[in-house]
Image 1 (cartoon, one colour):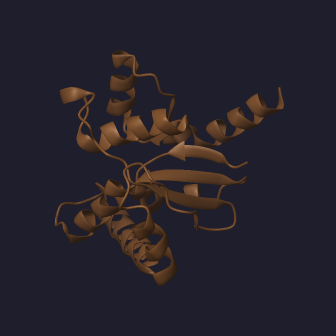
Image 2: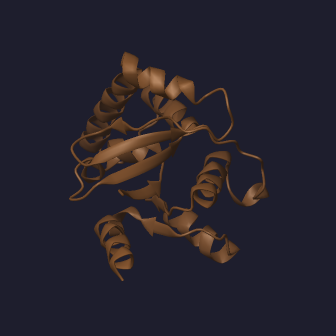
Image 3: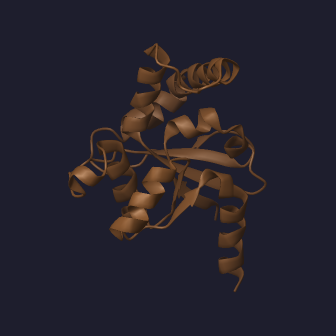
Length: 171
């Protein structure tokens, strides 16, 4: 069974290593974060602080959007959008990586402490019983300080997170 993480679609564009893991991984991605890709693509606000990095990530965002809009992938995504919490079938992102879109719903259960996308990440993580993978240090801090019952990994610890599950599974 592949290692699973709940994450945002933009992480696939920013962190290329997520697309070429050493072992199988499934990213469970809230649909609202797919929609966020379109907002990022169309925005004049920089996604990254360095101009070269920003251009690179914007190219990756456009490529990801185009990939999700391919007929088979779009069909998989659209199938899950009529039912809250439905999941798409897996969309391959390379040899070992696949993405599953989840039609998550923000129910404001975490109030003002977390924005709607963060809330969807938390709820998806709890519902699917898989850890969150993020690059947002502040989010990690708020999860810990708030005692939110989810496991969370910083994206810099991706290799460790992949190994940790393998270790747990074998003992």
